[in-house]
Image 1 (spheres, rainbow, N blue to C red):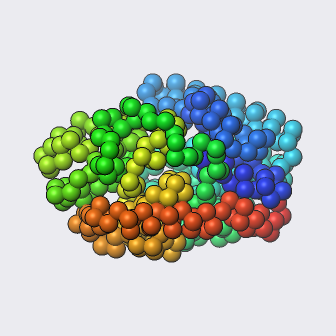
Image 2: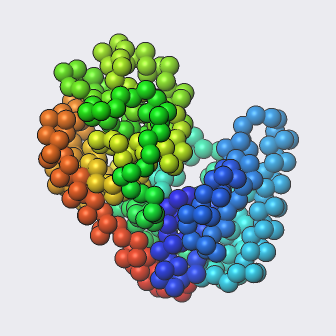
Image 3: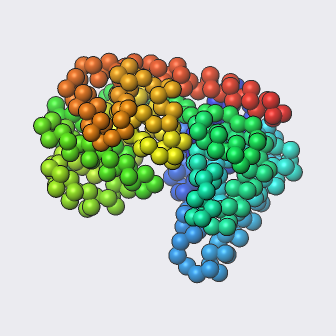
Length: 385
């Protein structure tokens, strides 16, 4: 959702009136986006949780919840489009009860509907075996009735072209808006690092998620090969709470006891504090289709702070970043190769600091909001938006 709102900021600055139809999972989430991103250029919700609609209860309860959301969303969207003339609607792929009203009402009001596609799965054969019929119908609507796509990678662009010949605009990532509180004097939050040591110990960050749980094992495997180095890894994200017991046990077995902390979900201020105190961000990708289609948005926000990122040569990352110049990039995509990049960072802190500075300057120019906004505005103009 964050990327959709970044697109709105960029388009608004270029004089294009577009709206993003997203789904906020909480009232605080909605307030955050309204405060941070373009005023008057987004339409957000705080109606429960999308995930909760498909969990628990019996079939009748689920059906009632989905039908209620469908009619509630349709009425709100109709009122919104009547009140606010717009050129285009940018949407993430949503459940059927959200996608259907967008497609129908978008055509009724003559608005270009442009999905922002950040997942590859509908283009792969396994999708049709694993997903429900409602998910398949939702994607069928997206491929049939949308006017164009915004895609995160060339790999994903090729996959989507197998489903539909609609025009597409490749946009890997965009820098979030610069705010006054991104500074080096953010006060320390004692509980932010969950017991991570302060002082001269290199502090590494890894943000975990349930969707990419395999990356956590990859990072810990790589760090287990660095027994002779001094470091501390802080694992953030909601998944780190669920993973704590399992991986603390395994970390002890691998000789990493006392070198890993699980912080859980952090507030924006806490996360910025941790990033500013940190030495580097661990952001590996694995050698499979799901990761080849990715471009992690969080890389840019971290690089803006002038801190180095350690990643792997997967997908199209090497089209944008160069090893030992703007990032540290392992070409082997193995735990051993990745550990050598971490070792290099720990052994050459001055060189790593220079990489962080060059990376910061690079992302400010290459992923500039205004430059990418102009390109996207030109693409939408070509659609008649």
